[in-house]
Image (cartoon, rainbow, N blue to C red; front, side, top):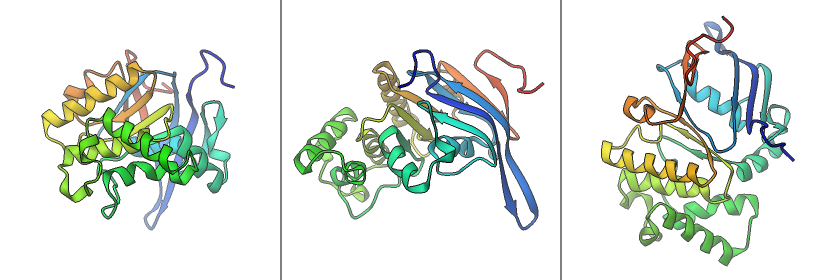
Length: 238
């Protein structure tokens, strides 16, 4: 069990190097980051600064070259692929910029998928939970529609409902408003604020300066290093 005041996310000196035909390329250069339960944290920085790679370290989608990653007190970078997939499905909700909904499944069926994968609940219970999640994002009336018949903002809200399906304590959002108009983006952000108020921990990558200014704590990345964290402006390791 995680002790009180222990970070829900704890990255310790994480380095990530990719091998390319042109040689090795280091995307993350000794990242150390702690996030407490119930925090809303923004991650900003130019393209190529390592924002998405940082999220991938937390989700276990990718593994660090060196360093350690703890989530809810569990070291995720040493799990097997199968163990990680099951653990991730129950503990982390991922919201992608391009929705990643299955086009041949209804909104309701898309939201039920994580429960199916993690074997949570039975058929009726899964359907009721999925409808509840769609109600949270204001889309229950569109439950039986295919993604192609929904607007971009509606598809993103379905993706958020899907991320909430297994009631994970952590939500990671990679540019969730990047393809949305300003009004819809503001609605998505307001939804995140409500989720945090109800105890979720959210890390959100964004290029939107107006939204970033509303996030309580913002982490800045540049060339694979943290250059500021919240009120701090001192570069990590300097």
